[in-house]
Amino acid sequence: MLINPSVIYTFAPPKTKEEMAGNITFTMVKPEAVANGNTGAILAQIEAAGFRIVAMKKTQLTAKDAGTFYAVHSERPFYGELVDYMSSGPIVAAILEKDNAVADFRTLIGATDPSEAADGTIRKNFAESKAKNAVHGSDSDENAAIEAGYFFSGLERF
Ligand code: IDP
Ligand code: MG
Image (cartoon, rainbow, N blue to C red; front, top):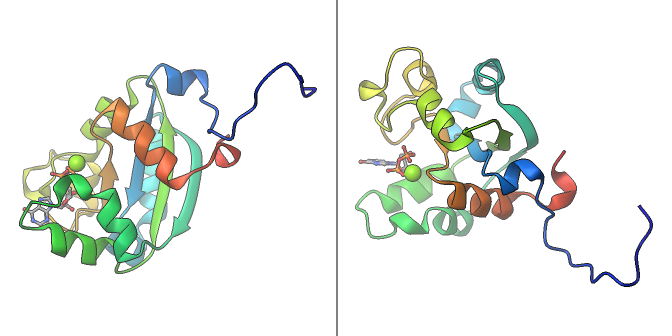
């Protein structure tokens, strides 16, 4: 595409039509699942369920990063434990695309507490505990867009 001088360009990440339609969600494979060698099996289950990986990276959160990401939980009693845990080792972050992505991904991962998660869900298969529960999944289209933007620029989305 040629640069059009009559258009004002910004560096805001461009939204794909799938994002505009709310068809993305954001996930992390959490530290214990990465450390236990379950990243590949979890990603395979995600792809087998029909999600397309739009962006992905392995990184490690600082306590500040984790605190910002989970700021909505800052008044909860488990916040300190959550921040320590989520910054304790590498995670794998990804943007996922599918029709009805947020709700379908929540179904795929299962309940927060793996003892309450349905059979076959990712948390039932891989989580260690309510805190170390293998994966994150966005809880709304709005938060999916915010979380995806926290980790990935427009240049990292394909
Ligand atoms: P979610 O991940 O299923 O959306 P949230 O209630 O949003 O669950 O909590 C965020 C994360 O905080 C959970 O995935 C889990 O890692 C941790 N967490 C939630 N509740 C507890 C708890 O009661 N004890 C310890 N950790 C918790
Ligand atoms: Mg949540």
